[in-house]
Length: 273
Image (tube, rainbow, N blue to C red):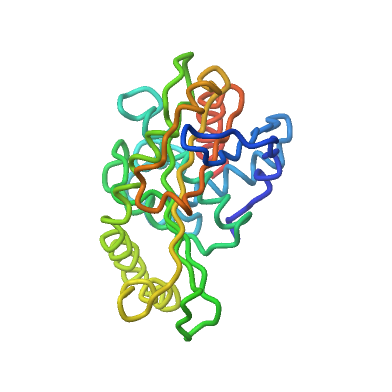
């Protein structure tokens, strides 16, 4: 299988939680990665690569292009390292995938991995709610305790500015309730294209809240390189206007030189294909 969660072992939760201006807890994690661990970096790069192009499909996709696997990924699939807005798309994709990994492997949601491979333009971000996760208590049975999680992720992976990215994530999360139906439909359509019957059934469970209610969990996550992280800015975050404020999960991940790590990960993903 192409998927791996070993890199999540580099996440270390810091305590106590920070607090927002309206008193909500912000759970902060340090991402203490180790690039000298070649085996782990390689498995992470493979996991990352398969979001854009499955290893089982790359040879068929590149056939006729004259490209090697690496060339195909860099020219057709991966956002550009140097041509704008490629670097910012890389940053956004990295943040979303890392949060999706956390939802799936740490919080035990089923998280679709379809949005990046379906992009038609590599230097464009995908639209809709950032990360969706699903929990169904019993297959084929509707329960009001089945759960849909919708998380918004924002990043500041380079520079020394102290941007309010958690506030940005909170503000964008407000829109996710409105975009929910469109996001679910988009995921379902990708699974229909792949004839993924079980996954289609999972999405359908959450498309009619009125007749088949379920739990909803919303979350906002900000990922910072260390030079962009600021506790004072973080403490000014205000989630009081969020319609799901009482149950809103807030999370921050910080680490050193994250944009350099992102470029290394894309390079490994291409070179080891």
